Length: 278
Length: 349
Image (tube, rainbow over the protein chains, first blue to last red):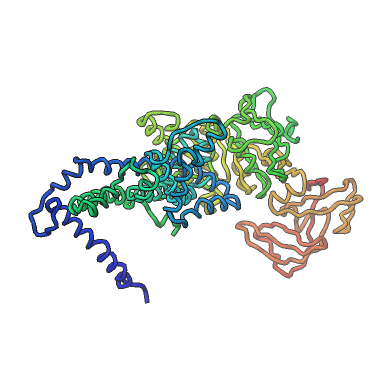
């Protein structure tokens, strides 16, 4: 028997209950009066207006900016790494790939607490080493925006690297030779040949990184101290301490919307089958 | 160092060669891919390098194009030392074995690529691309077509037009026709040769097919184990192969040993011939006439258009003869064949 539409039933049910229904409920909540719980009251856009003012704008923009910056940074680091791993495929490359992959299996909080030891002021690994070796005193890195940014890059780098490795593998060596032979400089080869050919991998990696970053919470909580409030934290506060579900719902909808705006156009243009060589 | 001898290269000494290879060697670890290759290629010449796979011919071509660098040796392009220069700085272009077309770009964008890299404006690029497409017999409607929609022969022409776009002084070809079917290959061989005549460019072509080389080339270099073993015009090489390797490479030949002025395999005397080997082409064996006779039994008969090829069982082992189609011999027949040793070519190696 060939798998028919019926085979999709379990996942369809799951998505209906776990994804579609909550979205509808949250969407509805986002449209009722602030600080109320009455789903039968008149609908209003007050929560959305407030989202861009009244101090909620900060976390929202910070999360988008942080996600963009992290994605860009990861891409810039992952490109040469992927090129190097692809060019030197073999035992050495396999070991490096493994070393990059293993941390994914360790709890994110544990890794971030580890990183906080590195960033701690005074006796932290970074500050302490600089002081002991070079006599340089630096202030704290921990509890700053820089710390959150470094944490985001550190945690999400593998999500950029592995899709990009697949993307880089899509560039045939002879196309680079041909471009060079036809007069392209190394920069032109990158722009005209390598990036377009590796685009599926790059896009998937960027998508994963961006989407994970915009929803990331632990980096700011563990490394950022009070320096940053990310949008997920703001949403959590609305739903818990503040008991302002409509406001939390509006912020949730906005984050979902931003994610959709980024995800759908990219997925529509990328042939996933080509990336996994089907 | 065969090519250093001007008599063998046939290059007039007073004109500057388009390419001058001076002792090019390339090592990959312990492997010697190229050993001391020296050669002058004249301006406007169609030069073909022929050799079996692994003979180093692709390595040589990549070095000429700048995609690889020689371990030792010098490469002069119109008298200028270009050793070590990257490929994008050289006035040369290459047609790759895989064609290496940019599948993510249209036919027009492929052809224009070299012009775009040189910062030429879009309108000029398009005009030039259409000219080039016309030159390789592709109509203007191909300009916007996706490369992936083109047939094998069309892709071949796109690759050629793309290589011609920058108006290169020298074009390199790395077995570009090997993947095509026989008829298309024949057509493109003729077109390539005529294109070379029309443009007056220097073409350096690589193939493992001597037949292909014979059709197109002004001169041929035979490569073996990273060395040029013989360089000459097609007829030089066909009529006077330097050794048994070249002779066998030239197609089906019969090779007879000569020792002490005898052909030991046929047990017949051969006065006046020094030790070595006698190269006998299939057409040099006749059923009538004079010369040395061989008693044969016909094993196989193959029709080759207007001629037939016979596989003969002889005291010297299997020999091959070509006869007019009117020849009546059939498998199983016994016959007497003759050849004139004075007409045959002798090699020492």
